[in-house]
Image 1 (tube, one colour):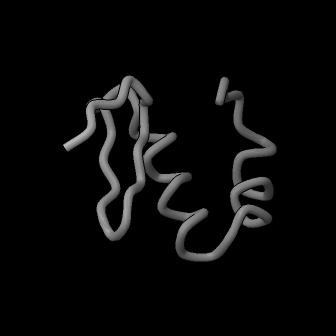
Image 2 (tube, helix red, strand yellow):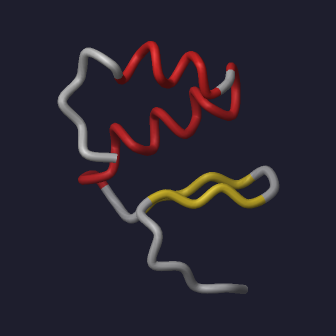
Length: 51
């Protein structure tokens, strides 16, 4: 067990986040893991997100 202050953490086959306030970041992490960083950039470009 290792504690992390990160808002979204992916280790092995587990992805978790700090709570409802990180829902967009969590969703984008899932997209990154499933289809890659390029898709994350495409999806998040029109959004006003501070990542």
